[in-house]
Length: 348
Image (cartoon, helix red, strand yellow):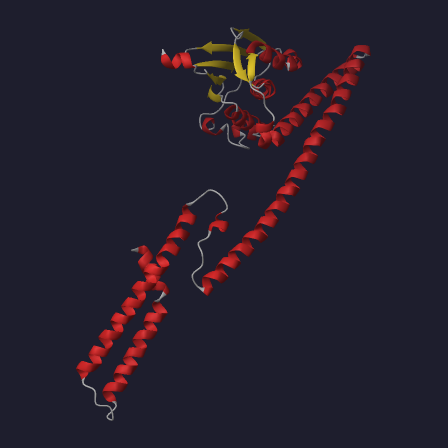
């Protein structure tokens, strides 16, 4: 019915012209004294003309129906380049419209391809820069560590220690930005293998040893000597983001515990801290890109990217992350590794 109304709407000027023409002919025929035509004959002429118009509209509707059905099918189709599947035009106007659509499509394709090329070039430059900047950071760290060993001035040692902590923050931000830039090509840069979770977690903890010591945070690690299927580099980054948040928002002399729970369907790495926690209204949005929450707005030292990346990468690896927290008391993050189902499990 909608298609028919649309067709009639397209033909409204034709119908309007027909009505004007028939009214004109009928009036001339009836009012001209030199023409002797009865009213019945005029009515007959109008009826014949009306049926001819109806036949014309019906035939036209049937003729164009398949064309419009094909167009509507392309509109509903969300796959492929529909521009090259347009139905064969039936009229000159349709041919012009098709040519115009193809021209606009080709122009837009050229613009998009140019933008994509520029985007790829920019991303390659940024990624290269991230890799290159890590070298001078490592060199600065070595120089500072050497200066720390050889210096006997306590004030200078404290200064070097503070600078070292800032270098750690810079390196963390650079690493986060590097992983963010590579997330679109994740499928080309991962290798799933069986990993010892204890080894992965221990390497991440070792990386943050200086912070644990400076803030005198107690670490409790137990029951994590188990194996999971994941990519070592990406998994280490995910755990690093979780642990970094725990360290950032746990006060001095606080506590961070790491443990694993195993059941029939999954293994769960649980990282719990006695930090400042997350407000209840912020919890549903902690994985949103750029969301910093109450503490991020108060202290202005959060980018809102870490947990977003962790969640997105975990999903790509087939894992999941959940958070529960009570403001002012604790935060508990769960990294979930679903158990792979074997053929033997299916037939048991």
